[in-house]
Length: 353
Image (cartoon, rainbow, N blue to C red; front, side, top):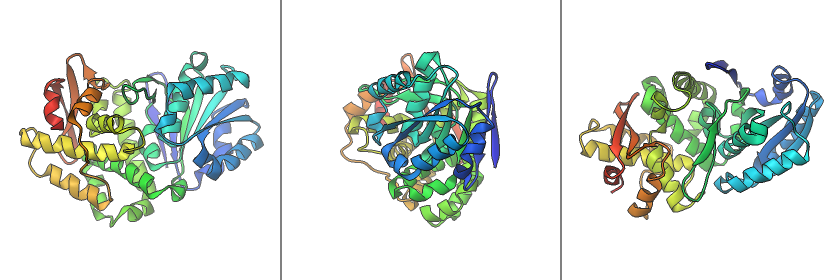
């Protein structure tokens, strides 16, 4: 399965196919001339796929160097970016060379950010190895690192030259990582695809969903493609992709990165924002209950303690979706259709009570 992201100044393909990783050498030669490639990955992914990917790149005639980070959000930092810059400079990468991101969202975000800023920008490829990265973070060109103040506070828009998605690599994922990817799938269905929602209702559990991974991933990527093409720089409709993220990101940073996984934060955020919106008459009654039933089926959290309102509010103050004294939150008109609602920073306190 292939999808093409058509943007004003740049187009690239998403290749979604079981076993695609074994054809990476052929894929990269169709996109790049022989050059030096810095493979950025984490220790866990490197143990599973690093040797095979490097072998394919070398066989295809590329010179490969490898930069390995520790797994987890703690590595998505300005310090890691600086370490990567030093590594790239030490190995003599020029503007004619490129970066290959092999890993989940942390690796993809960091590698994309480094690629977009090293020498004012070099080209890069995404090879996502987690469900969350395959359906969301590897597509659309958002790159970022975290700071002590907020998640993804420092970043850039930089589109890859291509994205290779192999559902077979999900077999090596921990259960927790599978589930946090499913939280984003539930989000996609809730905001834009009632047919996908019905498919999710028909699956027994996360393992049944994984048996249909190719078609589910394709459905999510198609939504992301459409939204990114319409609003590449996140000023309009693309904001609907943030359903659950406003509170979710605040939970991640207030609880401490890696205490709450990103997908878990999104699940909690979707439930909380919907619950309060229903109470305020901004959403139809019953939508929150549908979300809770769906999330529970896939063993995702719907409640969190301790809920520290003041810490959450401070994190929300630095949310990237803020516009002046207001912040854009995403609500559901119905399952399969989202709307953007603007609320003052002060009033957003009411959404985390």
